[in-house]
Length: 347
Image 1 (cartoon, helix red, strand yellow):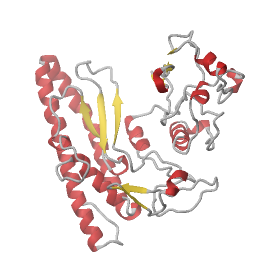
Image 2: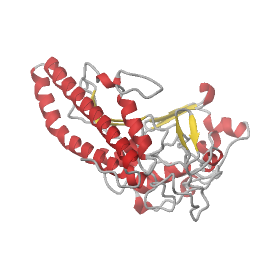
Image 3: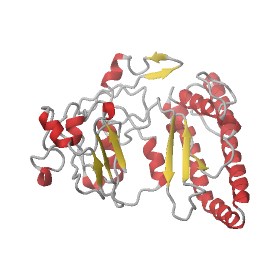
Image 4: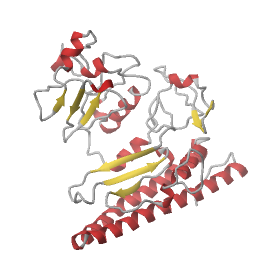
């Protein structure tokens, strides 16, 4: 279910996502039409449409005119659609997972237009595909930000694709000033990411074990997705240190600091890091089949044994990745100091 509660909690709406479709939500309203008499698929405040009409803010029409011509578009009525931060990210998601649909990007301020709510993907969406989606920067499109901040040109549609970097509370104008940020077409893999997560609900895992989760600390573009299970009894020692400034025993700051230096030059410094972590997480993804088989076998004997096993595995995996991030950070700093114009490589 995708649920949206409007300010003041006076009006709310929840929509069930069909099993064969996906939805992209970029901090905006997405439920355009709802039949509240269909309680299997929609739940919400009974007078949503009537309230919008009565108070004069109803917007009509949108993505599915053929079926809903003249109907109240709830997403457009109650929210601000296609802002500078969400229109590009929604468009990119639909075109990554359903390119055959050829969904066009809606422009800034097209408040009376919406993207399709639910879309059928061209193929089954894997966790690995979502990992790439979370670090996407419009690669291969006219909005390509994969080499920013050095990219400062305008694409044919007129969006300014400069990117402002924020670090330690200060704005860096490498590739754009703070004012330029208001014009930026924001990518999904943006530098303000604190972490990204993926939850895979697998029927073979008992509820007590929970889902298979993947978490990447800091900006996912130059970080790695690490596995996590609900059965664990402890957390990694590097995950227990919380600070708003760099500290060496924080897993978040290990990955965040590496990502920061990678953004100095994504081609020379960032690519090697990105490729390394991508191979690392794909290997971990393959490894989960064996890990889960062992965990399930132990669980059938004694849940306590399974808890002990998976806790040790998760902690070991996370600690090794944090240690590797520390090593990469040191090597990258040494490279920038001695060979700033060379291509960084990871041994």
